[in-house]
Length: 535
Image 1: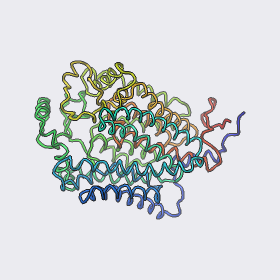
Image 2 (image 1 turned 45 degrees about the vertical axis):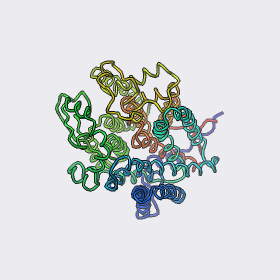
Image 3 (image 1 turned 30 degrees about the horizontal axis):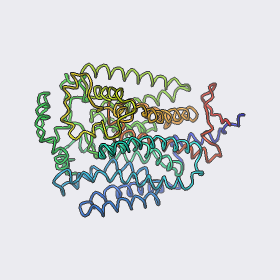
Image 4 (image 1 turned 30 degrees about the vertical axis):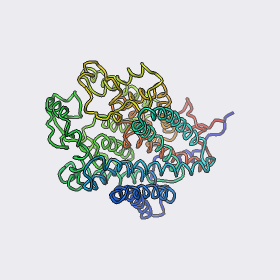
């Protein structure tokens, strides 16, 4: 028996919420005051533990945990910004504070504070959900339960890995679970609070661009402002002593004389452009990681571009090109192009076009990379070959770039001659396949389910944020075939899943306020313009 579908008014209300159309706050001053408060709280929670660490690590740790609990309880609506800000800017503060230390081992723990802040905030928000699970719609509950189920499966492989190598198991537990933690946390916050997301992301992107443009026009100034040369010296101290790596780099035309030289590469860091002879100094940004910065820029500029912030997107695109990272560039252009196409069509054709283009992209990158011995392709094949030997998986303690103590000592020449690496590296999907075996199906199924849900809701509401959500997850998953960073750095897939969660939360909040439920929506085959509620 079919129930009556949602009213046109409720349908339009959902569209306005998820498209983040301007809504009248109490006053413009009040809206900006909320954003200012969020950034102030974020700055304190990010910077204070780093500088307190020089005084006392226990004091810094206690402050980090206590401040995270207070912030998440009192300013729950600011939790998404706190988590994003901490993961983006923490390394800049570590760089500033690095002059108080003489070796990288002394500052390595400082990098944990952003994750601690993330987990503490997540724990407080999740506790609030567990206290009143019935207050949330079946739509939200199903997503929470499904993502929790995946986390339980990941935990099994983590438990096995603990007995093999606790350090590696912990690292990849963090890497694999972070997108799920952020998704759950942001979803709950998005349901409970109205967040001016485009305006907040605009300010966030502005701060990032200020840092990056200083670095772009005067790298020496940026390094001086942040004590960056000292930080990079500590960070690369082992690599600078690796004579073999420096010798091999010289054989390929790269002269390593300082830590900055490790950021030089040929255009887009691919063998396809090696013959052009174009060398670039890739941006690091406040995260002090080129690929992390590139993914962050691509996500923010694409999201803001589809919401009308064209000038900001163009300025950010200049910086994205300066990172010379091909995967994030494909992500940004793909998302913007997909939303533009989806807004003009009322069928599933845009998703079919996206799927076809991604297949062509994968085949091209794989074929060209295999022919030229590209590290990412032979790393993917390494993961696949090891999966075939043990389909059940090896545990989170084995495989992956971060599980290798000295990555520079890998014999890539031998791997290229063999046509594949002997371990899963340089490919997030290859690493997952190697570590979790057939259970990777559950991880990928969750992401694809959220992609499908976002697309069906877009067809119902025509809200650009939902079309962005569908494309962003799909493209990021494909990029993970050839980049470990596509899934495993905090500023790539975790940020995507956070923005998707806030978007879905906004839809649910709008629909729930109209006494309807997204869980009951399905798209009629005969019409893509209106949802139906089915009993």
